[in-house]
Image (cartoon, rainbow, N blue to C red):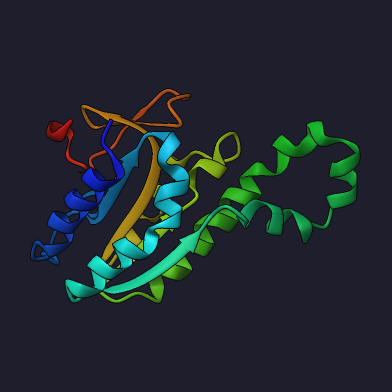
Length: 181
């Protein structure tokens, strides 16, 4: 597995490459994948990615998904009923997915063709929403680049969140690249 310094070095190389505006949506998604043990370090040193992005002449926006579910649940009209019957939680997860898609698209709408939107906290969605579904449903709205921090593994274009789920085949730009490990 790549180290934090390896990931940062590969991100530096990727962010400095010239951008083409006619690239397919899948090519506008960059998956910064890493061992789940690096999650705190990635989050704690996200400013280094921001610095590299701005030094390369690109804008920076950050959306953290970690608190999205509790915030959404706190305002849900059936919160007290769900607390009494937690087994019913599965029935409202499609609503939460729709909420996340709307939130992500809103962030993407505010971004320019030169901006990087960094999405952290994808591991917090485990068991609630599939990251693959979110990416697929928002891909056409990406104007600049979407960088998803991804605690998991990548092999032969297959990404596995937290190494626990069946992977999904997605043709995003892996950072570090597949041939680097």
